[in-house]
Length: 494
Image (cartoon, rainbow, N blue to C red; front, top):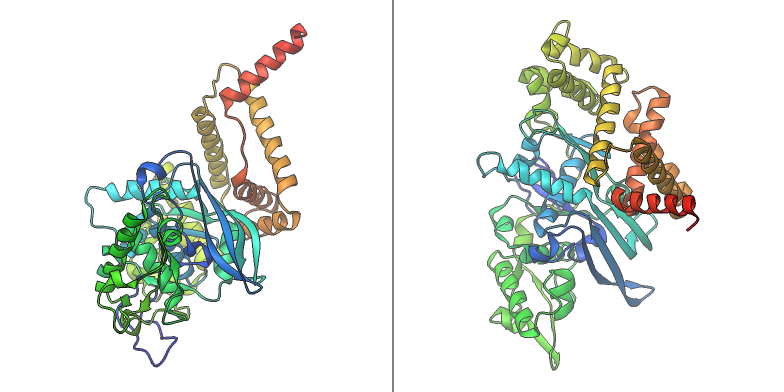
C-alpha cells in the first residue's frame, strides 16, 4: 500500500524515508498469471484464460484450477493497475468498498503521468473497463477468513466514470464485495514498489516473477523448486505450445533482470543464471531462486496502516480543489469530517456544477458543498433523480449496444423484463442467500445518507450487479428473433 514514512515492521531492518509508492497484490491470485503475455491472444473480446497453481492441503500437494473470464479482454499491464488501485483504496484512513478519486490522482500515485496529451487517461479508462469485465473462478482459493481452501468465484470491480476525460469529477470504483473481503481479511499483505525505476523497468513476465518471489522471500530465503513448464506457462503466461528450450531461455532472461536488480542472488558456487536450472529427466527442468540484497534494503512488508497526512496525497484533494476550496480549507475539511461524507458531497457538488452551472448555488459551490458535509444529510432529491436518469441512459445504451430497436417498444420492454427475471432466477439458484444478504448489507453502508427505501433499492441494484458477474443472457437480436419465431409458431400452430 502507499504510505508516507511508515514505521518498519522489522526494527532490525532500515526503514525507507522517502514516500512509498507501493502496490498491494493479494491472496492466491499472485500465484499465477491472469492472462496470456501475448496481447494478440488476451486483448480480444471475450477472452477466457485457464491456468492454476500448486498448493498443499492436509500435507498433500494439489493443483488448483483457475478460470478467468474477461468480457472485454485483458492485458498483463492491467494487473499493475489492479494492485495499485487496491493499494490506494486500503491506504485511506477509512478504507471502503467504494473508492472515489480523480484519474490524475491515481496515475500520479502509480507513476504513470509521463505521456502528454491525455492519452494516459484514455488508456486508464480502458483498463478499468476491462477489469470490470473480469470474472474469476478457482476450485481451491485460499479464504483467509475461514483459513481453508474454497471453491469460489468473484469479480474485481465496477465503475461509474464521467463521460469526458477532462472532467474534474472523481471516478467511482466499487470493489466486488467478496474480493474486497478477501483483501481486507488477509493478514499477510504483499507490498511492492510500483514506481521505482527497478520495478517499472521489468517487462510483464519479469514483473510477475518478481511479485511471486516477493511473496515468498518475505517468509523464506530460498524458493521451492519450480517446474520449468508450470513456471513459464501458468505463472508467467508464456504459450503452452512454446518449446522447452525457448521456455528455458525466456525464464533465464527474467532471472537475469531480477539478478541485475539484486532481487535474487546466485547461490555459492553458481556462476550464472543458466546454472540455476536443474535437469531432472529429458526435457524436464526445475529452478529455484535465492533471495537477493534488495530485501535487506527495502523493508516494506507488514507495514502498519499509515493514514494520509498530507492533503495533496488524499484522493479528495483534486475534487475539493476543483470546487474552489483553498489548500488551508481542504486540510481543515479532511481533518474534521468523515471522508466518505466528504467524497459524496464533493460528487454532488461537481455534478451540479457540470449539469446545472454555478447559477444553481445560492452563495457558492464551496458553501453548498461544505454545508452538506457539515449536515451529513442524505443525497439531494435532484441528485437521486439524476442518478435514475443516468441508470436509464446507461441501460438504454446497453440495449442499443445489443442491437435493440426502438421500433417495437413492447418487445423492448419484454426483453428488459425477461432479462431481469432471468437474473433473479440466476441469483436465487446460484448465489448463497447468506452471501446475497451480506452483499446487500455491505452496499447499504454506501447509501446510508439516502432515504431508507432509496438506499435499499440502490443497494439491491449494486449487489445484484456484482453477484451477477457470471450471469449470461442472450443479446437482444438473438432473444427477439427466438421470441418472434415463437409467437409465429403459436399463431399458426407450427
